[in-house]
Length: 399
Image (cartoon, rainbow, N blue to C red; front, side):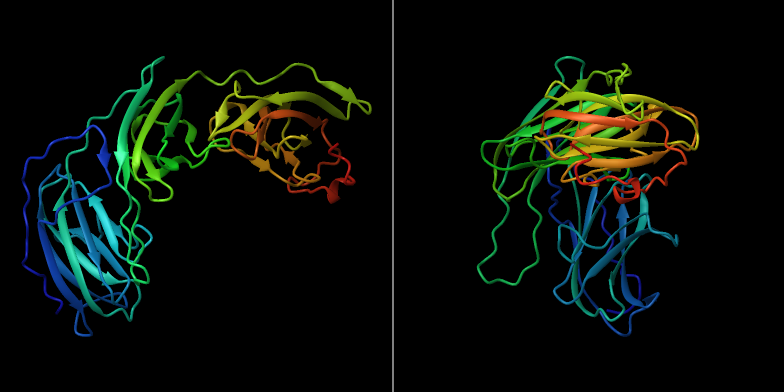
């Protein structure tokens, strides 16, 4: 196929019915083209390509794909006359084929560019496009009763024994939810038929905000998430092994985080260490299924504190967060720098303020008693990345 723009335009305007739970994107192709990348085609960088013209309607959801047995495909979608793509995809579903879902904000002509991932990619390909059903309205997560849904996943297609075929992504279903900024949510999925996995995906950019496979000792899923901005998210339910069956999904609004523990701690060795005896339990708040307790520490800029958490019943994790950002990412964290599977870190504050030391379990659902030690400021300050050897501690320091 040569480099000229293909005149096989298509326009879709069929009316489709919204579904309460949208299954994995699937569309009967309304347009398709068989092509071939050759040495005579135009180049995008060092890669040959073919362009196809598509006429799309504003507000419609389209699924566009390219597949090949000869090369690793890449697709890019451009507005007519534009140099920057509005959507692109390389590998989809664990294969080397390409697929994207796109909803135009403006109607008009678009260019679908099919090219190879590598500069020497040549061979036959098939490009397809079709319209997807409209997304169902986003559900609210009310205080108290929350949101509940159910559905059924079909089993993943099986491949003939010994067949050399690309991996096919297992089916999934998604439920659209409207989340509010600053609120904490917990999402769950259960099934008696398959091992569930849940993903919370931001609809604005298709990024995964939170996910979980197995919660606790079972094969069900649960994850907590604090939304930084209001918007629509897709709660996706997948089958880890590809088995189909019925499932139930839920979302609940959680109360704000409890105030961090600011009570005086026990002191030892002339107040070098402050020591707390604590316990993680299912009544504690959790982050992606990991229960946690928070402790408030006021620090001055430049000072270094040592933090140790040890437990006999679970693998501890410690993290330091700013008090103003308890729902965000830690400033520093550690899992196994202490003896065994215990935690140890040295944290140096960059500015005056209140900080939170968070004790959690490495594994989702793990609970039990622990001991937390936080030192008085170390003089002179240690580097934040200091390890056990730097602190002059022996292998029994965590017990």
